[in-house]
Image 1 (cartoon, rainbow, N blue to C red):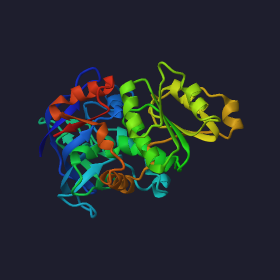
Image 2 (cartoon, helix red, strand yellow):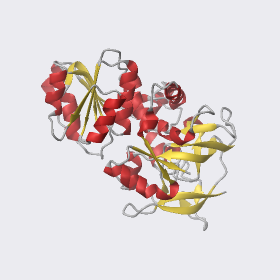
Image 3 (cartoon, rainbow, N blue to C red):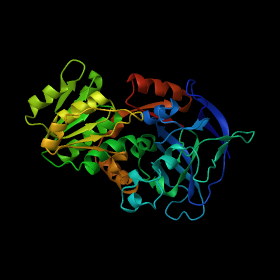
Image 4 (spheres, rainbow, N blue to C red):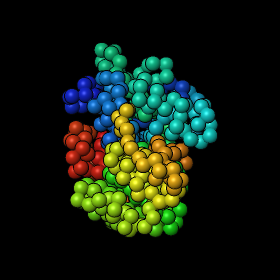
Length: 366
């Protein structure tokens, strides 16, 4: 069928909305008509080749929409179902089989290579030239996307799909870092470095679980103000204040958990320095391959402190997204406050506003 998609033709040029053709779904695949899709920093990273993906390519990995067709073997999802699309995984490797699919042994091929495992793509131009797709098993910057039974999550019919897409990655990642990966408990202390959509989701989750101190660090005062509204008990502008000194003054001995959502070495180093005895720093923010950070070995070793990576919030989308939906519908997880809407034709503006900090979580409407 004919669709429209935002195509990245080169890393130094804007996306261009073009007519494309999409194949019918193959076995295990699902064709989704998009209602909305989030814009994530990872999309910008792929566009600029920080994570190299083949071009021309259709990006997008926080899609929400209505199922139009299903391929052979799809049993749990039917045409007409409202779905959120999340990251893709194989379902067969040791980590997938142990319910840790965000560390799938095939995570990069299935999410970043731009093709199905057999090297094919569902998208092509009118002349039959292939266009790379299957980014995060979806490529949702298009009126229609091809996803997979594993990475499509059916959501309640009364959920507003315009806000639902970011549950598939950014919101899931921040909340999952707190609730799954680090398993923060009531009364514990948390620092969040960076208050974009991932960091603010972590702050909302920390409030949900009853953290005693929730400290937000950023360079943007407007975002810090929103962090305070969403649950932060202390905000620190890292441009004008020393975050480590401020945190240790507030929590003598250091915090239980620090979550870095920036991927910046200096922020990671500060996060580690804030940790108390047996504290853990979770690295959520992506950085270019080869990025290095330093840490005081004595500080880490003598206090039993830990540093760990966190991908997609250690979340199983099939169970965690419904959990977040239920929390939102009960009024306890207001992630919709992070969202700013843009029409599909303004997708390049959405990226510019995300980069400049004007928008926390841009969402494209179809």
